[in-house]
Image 1: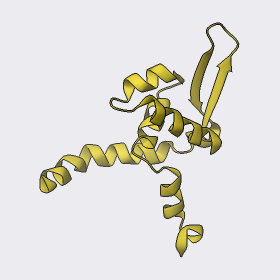
Image 2 (image 1 turned 180 degrees about the vertical axis):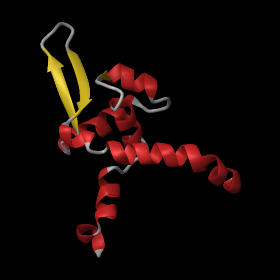
Image 3 (image 1 turned 90 degrees about the horizontal axis):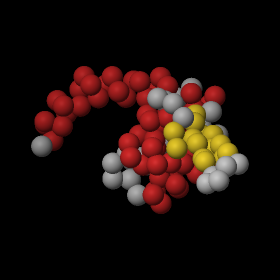
Image 4 (image 1 turned 90 degrees about the vertical axis):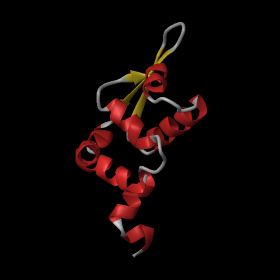
Length: 108
């Protein structure tokens, strides 16, 4: 089938990277500034967070709003397209709640 034909593979390619789903998790709770996202995502470097946000913005999943203030204020939120990912994020949360401990216990 290849990447062009398999919707699961295409979706995984869009949501790739350790931080992408965690960024989305945070934005599902509401609009956030860069510093708020960085604080919520322990261990993410500013460079990685910035890159992932830029990619999500290019994909049309995240909206970046710049306010003409001094100092400038930038906020990130989900677009309408980004909001459609809610069932995926919720399914991952539910699966993790029910099964992650059991799976992780088996793998040490």
